[in-house]
Image (tube, rainbow over the protein chains, first blue to last red):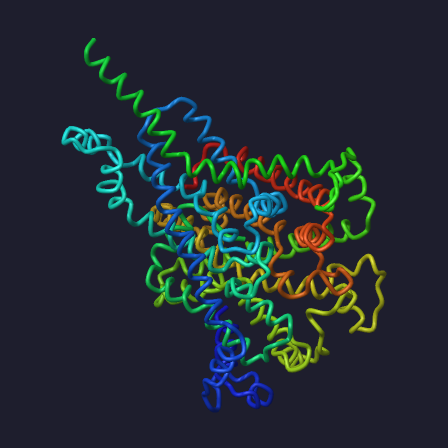
Length: 254
Length: 319
């Protein structure tokens, strides 16, 4: 399971001659960072990295806010059509992205958003899944807490941000991690809605350079390592949340 | 009376508030999921190349789908891919979960190691596997060489896997028994590697929910480990297994990125899958209506699978 990674990383640390002459050994005869240097020099990988950060962080942050607020409404407020609206929300979770990618492209095109950061971000600034996940958690918070807060003159939004959200920190962390991972690794969406090199994300940018034959194996593996490291760091910081997120939800980004 | 009046007023102000709170989420869902699904349905009955007028043509797109060979190829390949990745993936992840469920040292390490491919992007894993699958200098061919297997060009071989195996034994079998192309098998291997850790975690959670007392009781009754597995573990785990089964079928029907990054459906459509077919028709050939009809075939398949999942799992909650 882990060997492909080790080969990938070790290939990235070998110079060109060793990649060809000694391809299979995991420990390079001589460790060199020349591939990393070259990949930064020959393609705008730093730019791609920053683009990926912009897109992923914006999506993650806005989902945390919009989903918390709508989940609060579903778990704490009474309003007409509440259950009907909630079923619609659940229903949208069953629609695969690939089925609607054509109309979504056309809609973004209609708003003249193709080839902008917004095209990669706006469709994902809220999600049915996040709302659902947080609602389930909010329902478990005892009603008495809210009554006490209301008696103390605490409004809805203040109650949400002062009490509910701090309580929901583990579940918010789970949502944040999965949303970030999903948007960081996303390839399909940038592929469909962007053309300009300057706004390409890391995944799409690397794939394009691979296709155009602009990189050798050592450089490619260096790029791959750079693209994977943020997620690995995230995983080691928050391993528990990852595991919990999966077992709680059966969520996956196919 | 008075109290009732107050609570009624609260309720009224809550309504306005509630609609404001859910507005951002519903705007997004409405514009980017609900409208698109109806729009896609509408498009599937029309001919449109994005530039000219939309022309209503009834069921012609669907008829055309089943007439062209390429769509059948995509459909068959997607089924092949499902038949390979789902059983192997479930078997492997269940075995790994069983191994990790026993109290071994370094559980955290193993769990992390198996989970790493899940977190890695498809693009990154595709690069690594392309390196492994290289026909010259590729490590897989190198290792197979030790057991006397001739080098294969894994990602560029349209011949069926059974053809290749039987040919190497000096036998010829008819083309239709050739099975999935070598390239499709290679892509399946890549996907299995990437997804096994994910299903393993779900199985692991299911295993940890089985009360230890069941095993203790069985042990006292003299049941061996194999008997315990088939009489306790497997039956109790069956809802989890069913859940994983349907999920992995649904996901395998949507396979796209692996193909888009490595082979682009080639060689000779040997790895063409349903979603890649949709993508190519829509965004390369601009046959938007036609592509939408293929998208709706996919949607129908997914909905049927989801229906079974909901129906059979009933009220069992996984969240």
